[in-house]
Amino acid sequence: MVRRPLGNHHDGPDTLLVTSDTTQTEAVTEETANQIEKLRELIDRAQVVLWDFDGPICRLFAGHTADLVAGELVEWLEGRGLHGLLTETERESLDPHIVLRAVDRRHPGSDLVAVLEERLTLEELRAALTAMPTAYADPLIRTWSAVGARLAIATNNSPRVVRAYLASRGLTDCFAPHIYGRTQQLHHLKPDPHCLNRALNAMGAAPTAALMIGDTPTDLEAADEAGVPFLGYARNERKAKLLREAGAVSIVDSLATVLDLVRAQA
Image (cartoon, helix red, strand yellow):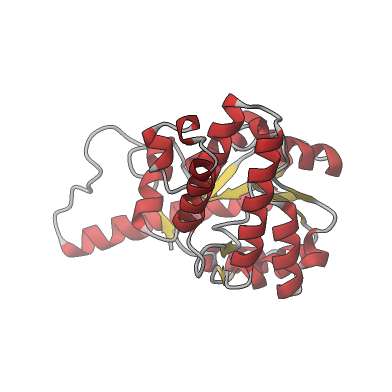
């Protein structure tokens, strides 16, 4: 099912004025058909597909939660007398990337940042062992590659982690060598478009001939900055709401719809 981009296509309340159940059903069906057609156009234009990793491809921390990893990074800092490096908000963020970036802002390029980044990478590698594949992601990746699209990863996760996961699913050949992830230059993390631009430059692709699939507002912001069309993946309503509020127009709650449209290209 393709989600309607609530709040992005008209003024006033997002409701349909109806006079009967039949009229309402017809209106909803027409709206859904229009959204599917827009999605088909988005997919048909995409010669290169840039994937975020954690979310669209898998739930990396499904069995090894990110909030615990963030807490461990905070505890490690505090154990070294570095409690003051983080604000209360940063300490309570439950997001390891927020902790990492906060330290980098205060000590950019330092050995401390390098150690923290490596600790996060090791935790991500542990998480990859129990990561949950996103429904329909594996067949979609294989099918899109088979019909001629070129695929790349553009992520804030470590490329070592991405490679390990893809190898475990037999997907490496669909992406290699185009895996662009976190480096120790943390100012290049999304929403900075650095990893998207690296992928586009390496593949010799124009931004307008590409498509970014992501599940966060930072993915959308990076795509907008790079000039790349964006398709949001939202596994729940909370994710969809965040994407809509950030301005995403095309959002799906299942990759099954995308898979059907890509198969139609064959």
